[in-house]
Image (tube, rainbow, N blue to C red; front, side, top):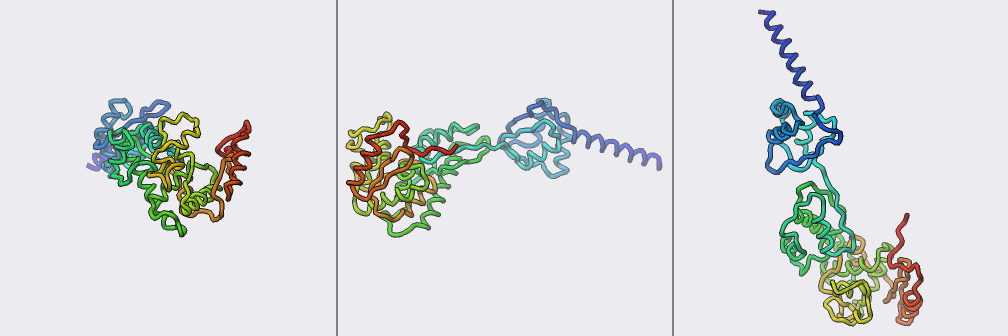
Length: 338
């Protein structure tokens, strides 16, 4: 009797060691590993059978029993990468934790909503929906009360999983913009020549398009705010270009400055009807906290910076110096550090 029990114990021990060895043995993966997708609604049993068919998992039932023992049968949908050397226990842990592959997508300050939407829909493993085909359909899907999607997407780097839809990512960027605008609105200075966060967003988009030099944003904001307070037209070229749309061929002419559009601030008074680009937090902050001073004009100097003037005569002299006598190395944006 005692001998039979001993043999049973020995046999059980041998079986346990065999099971353990099977679970810690590396899966049959090639040098580059394996990338695979777990669809929404799938379960661990289905995933293990699929991996068995690919020759990766040899004993799917054994792995499933291990998962039940560890209470790790719940899994997450998404794209997984199994590097060479992964064993069955690692596999169960990854699926249970949801260690899915994540992707990065960057939306840049100064882009239009159309450019941002194109970038999102071009993102790797982004699911394209009918709602994300155009800025108009996207605005409707987001329930946006503003007249346009323009400006209501926050420029930033976003991390997402495979299978994320364009509208899901767009909603994340939109909610981020609403949050940032609300935070900055609470820190605004007084008095300002506008009454709503939406108007601040419009002004911020003009500031974003006028300079990529952070040190000048609040000074440009000061010029715009003083002009609004005095009833002067803003006369900023980016609004003209935006209003021209596809008609603009890259060459801004004097005739364009006189061409009426709802956005041409050489023609209209006050702010344009919507933002003209995606402003970043710094541009929003500048719009709400403009720099004090007496300058009412500015002109690009050709080195990425601007010359600011308080009088029209001084401004005209600056235009003659920096615009009418352009150097060969003239550029409108700052040179990037190398």
